[in-house]
Image (cartoon, rainbow, N blue to C red; front, side, top):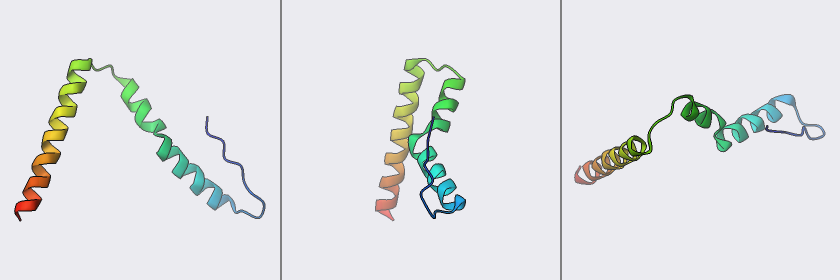
Length: 65
C-alpha cells in the first residue's frame, strides 16, 4: 500500500501528482496485469528474446538511415 503524506501548505493536486508518480514507479499496475494470466517460464523467456531481437533490429535500422 502506498502512503503519501501531504505536507503543510501543499495542495491536494500536488500530493495526488506525487502519488501517481510513485504508483507508476513502483509498477503496481504492471504486476497486477502480469499476475492476471500465468505464462510458462519458457514462453516468457521466448517473448523476452523476441522483444530484444525487435529492439536490436530497430536500433540497427536507425543507424543505417
